[in-house]
Image (cartoon, rainbow, N blue to C red; front, side):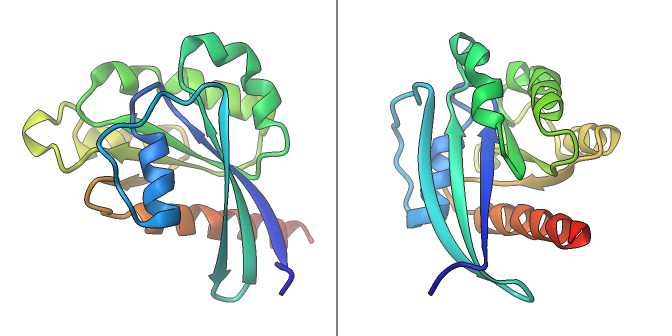
Length: 175
């Protein structure tokens, strides 16, 4: 059956925050300890049935987080309907870089929804960015916010589905 909607979702965030792990947990419900860093972009697809909308095909663009790919970001963000902005809860540096990602995305896709993802919540003893820090950042930047663990699967599917619903709500508001 043809999907009723085809959407483009980008995963944003610095290298090693767990973007690729989140995508594979969502698509295959699997977790691996080691992934090679994404070079440029990794393209994946997932078909979903979303209540009140029907069949949706999500094209998921997992963007390499290294600084060397910054010049390609605008190209990759072209046509994106929304983004999951991921940081590593055990790394202050990845949280401090969020502004750069938000700015790049909003320049390319002004109105598209973004959900902030605090990943690696399973590493409880190493957490440096609290859920309340995350909420404060999300609120001040008008973002959704979900805490996840690609390792345990905590809230991973919920994050993708929540973003998909926000995208579809926006599309249906415009039509």
